[in-house]
Length: 152
Length: 81
Image 1 (tube, each protein chain N blue to C red):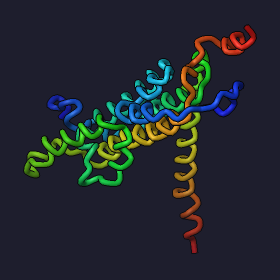
Image 2: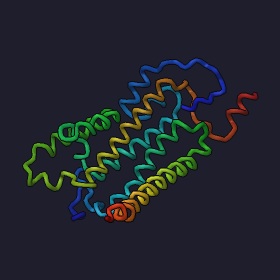
Image 3: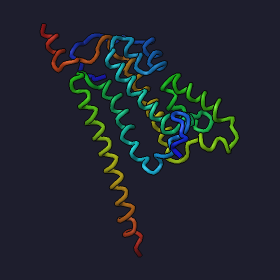
Image 4: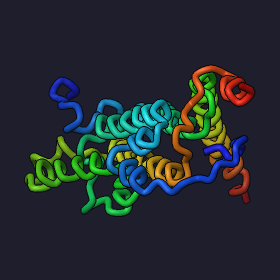
């Protein structure tokens, strides 16, 4: 959050919002009254995760073969864990010849993995933001409306 | 090959030759999230998302061109006896 807040209200610790932000990206901000901000975070996060799975397939999340990447990806929460479980259940047990079309190779696998890892790291930033976000400090819809409200 | 492709299950191998174009949606997604926590005003939000996307893409392309020139031009000169 921007540090140039004009009012000096004490910032409260939002424990439940942190858990919600991990469970589903954006919900943490919505839970503290920042609905517009939360919906934009959610849409951006889902865009990155869906692009990652679209490009790399469900093999883009693999905690066994790409363990270090998974550490970054898992910050997206249960969505990524569900994709990993699907990968382990549907693709991992298959014989090599059947697995060939389902496993991404080269740039496709790299970019799919990178998309979801970046989503995870961005959600880590979101979680850090929600720790010290002020309740109800949502987007202003029109320019200068915050200043006008302060003057009233 | 793409006819038998099952979205979200199989990888999109058709994009392999133009994989670098995926930089655009990647940076756009990051900008949407980052500007959502940095902006105070929705009136300038999408403008700042577009600016950030352009700046990051421009930066990466500039670094790629600089490194390409270094490898193609400078290193052969340094290798001359």
